[in-house]
Length: 143
Image 1 (cartoon, rainbow, N blue to C red):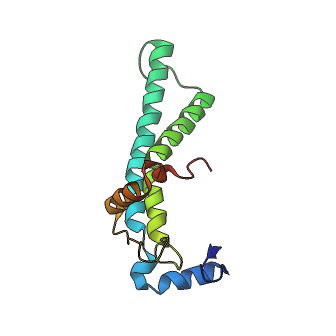
Image 2 (cartoon, one colour):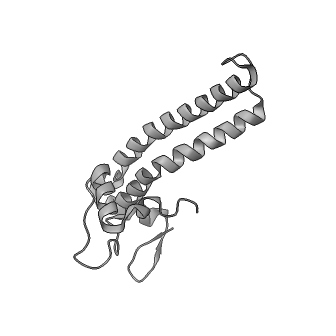
């Protein structure tokens, strides 16, 4: 459920879609740019970390890369580690995406007149750091 900001009432899925649709087609797709921008670095970094960990393991076990098969449990641990690293590094892009997606909802943006409309990923990153500090990009990372 989404909080509408008007008296704190909750919106269901239909209400949230209706609110987003008020912005027209762009309103339904706000935040898609940062979403796409976050997919490539996440997937690339996760793959890079996973393969690097597997190669390091093979070198330590056999002295050569790729000779010994990596046990399933080790592969799972490497996959989890790679996912953790990739998610942590690309998390600021998720923060910007979510901020862009909710910036048009009632009550968003703090005090009246202080709301800055985020125009894209880089503008969002800069604005959040300048207004709220580096920590804002990792807010709720471990929730």
